[in-house]
Length: 380
Ligand SMILES: *Cc1c(COP(=O)(O)O)cnc(C)c1O
View (tube, rainbow, N blue to C red):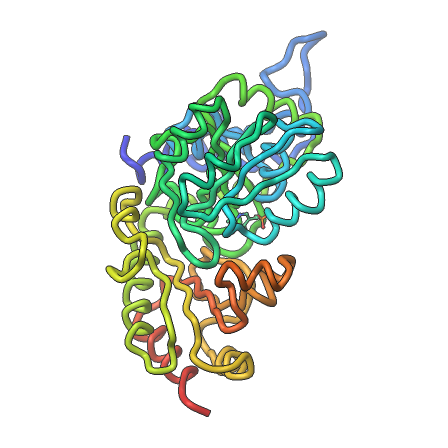
């Protein structure tokens, strides 16, 4: 099956008892058992829930993996992957990361003497150089957040496997529609399903997919033992969102291309970051590794932070808010919002300055989005 057919059908059969075409919301905490050790595959809803199983199987199919697991948030999925580590272990991560991921590494893992080294996102040599005898995994985001640099997944997978390490890829920004990391050699792919996967800004959720049975068993054990599972209603909403993932991603990317071109020519814009622009330093890699360039566009404003604040206050269709990947357009100021937990010196050294704005380009009519940006960017 091709992508959108899987999105609509994988893991989702008409309900065997009633024929209901949509997977029911199994709003239950426990299941009747007919006798000792005899049940229909479900005992207690932390361990398993049929609505959740449908989402887990659908996500596995979309990422071309064998096993899926769903979580109550993207960070809960991350924490579960990190449960593969023990005290004294080490990991290597790319340096342009979601702020919450950085916060887990620096403020939670560090308390268990698990250290993280950071490699410049695009530099394959730096990942290899950072590896120590106690390194257990490499962690990537590509495209990165918020600077939209690309990391060559295949090249880093080769480094990881030469050293017997697992490669984890956070695929939230491109979604499986545009990029399938397992096919490029990653061992584990994870998502904040809060973003494009659900796509309607009404659920917090996370997902992990892997084809490695041993890894899956360890993660599944942790999912049940630590318990960060999603509720059936959230899972059902996410399944509903997934059905239109392909068609949404095509429109996000088309609108983002138009917005990136508009901003590139605007006198108040210093620099635009969008992998689809021929001027983007990783454009060639993006063409090779992704089947589309996604819906995220960042840009550097010419002016002061006060100018940036004035601009975001004028926006009418773009909403000034954290998050991304919903049908509606959002604008965010990474330095004070999503990446506020990263110390200023570290942020600025990475190019994440106070005048950087990040847009999650929605699927409204592109003409309206351009008109909104144009009026907001007017000189005072
Ligand atoms: C939002 C996000 C997360 C965290 O997910 P939550 O669902 O908010 O817990 C992780 N990685 C990336 C790239 C994100 O954008």
